[in-house]
Length: 383
Image (cartoon, rainbow, N blue to C red):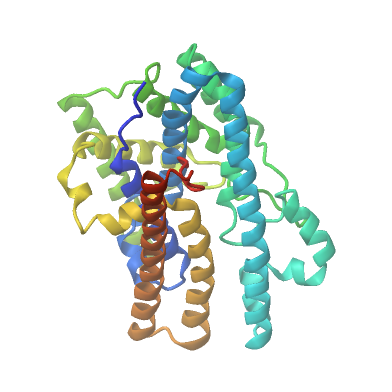
C-alpha cells in the first residue's frame, strides 16, 4: 500500500494552535484578542488534542492494518516514552529557568504564579511527583494529557478497526460518567488536580481519532451539505455572540449576558459541553471550507505555520521557555507597546526559525540518504 499523502491542513492548524498557545500564555498580550479563544468558548488546547487524535489514527491506523497490533502498539508506546522524556527535560529546564529569574530579580511571586514554589520548598518530593506526572507547573499540563491518552490508544485503535460505534459510545459514556461522579486525577501538591482531566478530554481525542481513521477506512465520515454547514455556522456564531455578550456585560453591567446563568461556569478542566460543542462546530467549518489541496497551504505565507505544525513537539517545548521569558519582560520590565511587539515578534519568530532549521536538517539528511544510501536517523513519521 502506498503511503498516504500528507494533509497540510493538519500541519497548518496544529502550527497555528502552537502559535496561539504562545500568545495566550503571555499575560497582557493584546494579540490574544485574535486567537481562537476570543471567538467563543474553546481555544487552542481543543485544536491540539483533536488533531493529535486525528493524526495518530491516520498514521497508526494504516500501520496497524499492514503490520498488526503488537508492532504498532510498540511504536505508539515508544512515542509515549519520547514524549515522557521530553516532558521531564522540559520540567527540569523550566523550573531552573523560573527559579533563576525569581532569585535574580528578587521576585518570589514569579515562582508562585508559575506554580514552581513547591519545587523550591521541597525539591526532593517535587521531582518524584514530576516523574509521576503529578506535579505540573503552569504551561506544562498538556503533554501529560497527551501521554495518558496515547498509552491506551493501541486498544482504542484496534477497537475502532472492528466497530467504531462501540468506541464512540464508550467514550461518550465515560465523558458523561465523569460529569456525574466528578472524578478528577489527583496532582501535587495535595488538593490539586490535573488541569486537563484525561477522563473528560479523551472524548475529543477519540472523536479526532474516529474521523482520522476514516482516511484509511473504518472511521466516521463527515456529513456534507448546505444544511450541515448552516447548522455548524449557526452554532459557531451563537457561541461567539454569547461569549461576546459576557465580556460586554463584564464591562457594562447593564448589558445582558446571554445564557450566563444557564451555562456558567465553562469548565476547561473537565471539558465543558459548550466548549466541546463550540469546537466541533468550528472544526466542521474548517473541514468543509479548507480542502486538503487548498492552494494557500502551499504558499510562502502559510509555509512557516505548516513547518511549526510538522515539528510540533520541538516547537511546543521551545514555546514554553519563550512564554516564561515573555512573561518576565512584560511583568518585570514594561507593559508598553514596544515590549509587547518585541515579545510577540521575537517569540513567534524564534519558533518559526527553529521549525525551518529542523526542516532544513531533515531535508539535507534525506538528500544524503538518496545520494549515499545511509539510513536517516530522523526519517520517521511523527504524531
